[in-house]
Image (cartoon, rainbow, N blue to C red; front, side, top):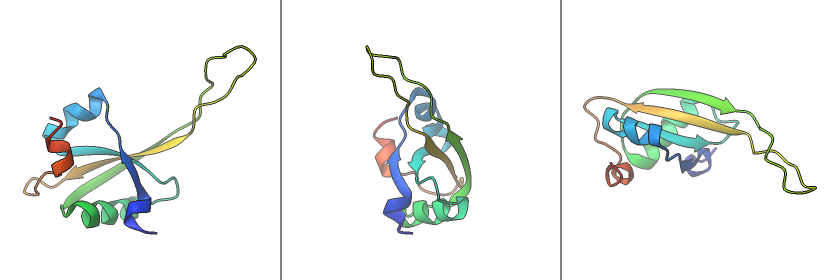
Length: 97
C-alpha cells in the first residue's frame, strides 16, 4: 500500500496539540494498515525517525436524530506516532504549537 493512502489526514484536537511538544503526532489512518506500515509511511512522507506507533479504532456511534433521519458516525482508525528524541519534528505540526 502506498504511503499517502495509509495516512489519510492529521488529527487535530486539544489532546493532540498538547502532545506536539512531546514529539507525538496523531493521524487518521487506513483501517487495514498495520503498525509497521504506518511507521514506514510516516518515515517516508516526513523524513523522520519513528520510535513507536500506537493505534486505536473508534467504533461507530449513533448520531442525534434530525426529524425522521437517524444515522451513525463513521468508524475511524487513529495512529499516535512517537518520534525519537534526536529526530527532527514534523514541520506541518510545528506551525500549530
